[in-house]
Length: 76
Image 1 (cartoon, rainbow, N blue to C red):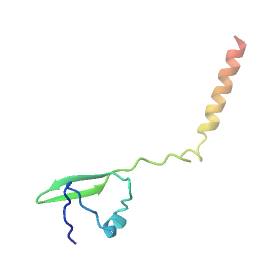
Image 2: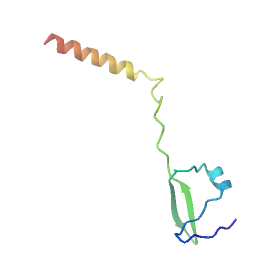
Image 3: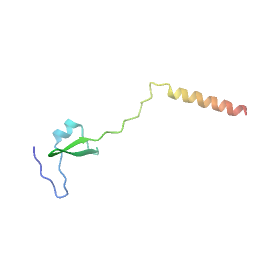
Image 4: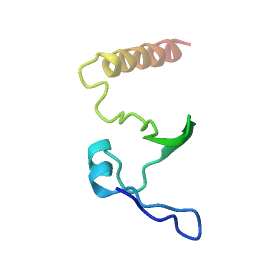
């Protein structure tokens, strides 16, 4: 598989490799020199935090603490 480098120094990552590596439009990739060639890998994606604490008691604990704070403030 060979591709020509464009005038801006850009090359296209073949679809087969993008699919295999999970590279999607907008993803960041990192490059480095490895001996006599250039290597590429998908840069780490930020973790999706949605629903991360669903199984935890964190929300309930925070609500209890806030109620206790309000009760203490009301006594003053």
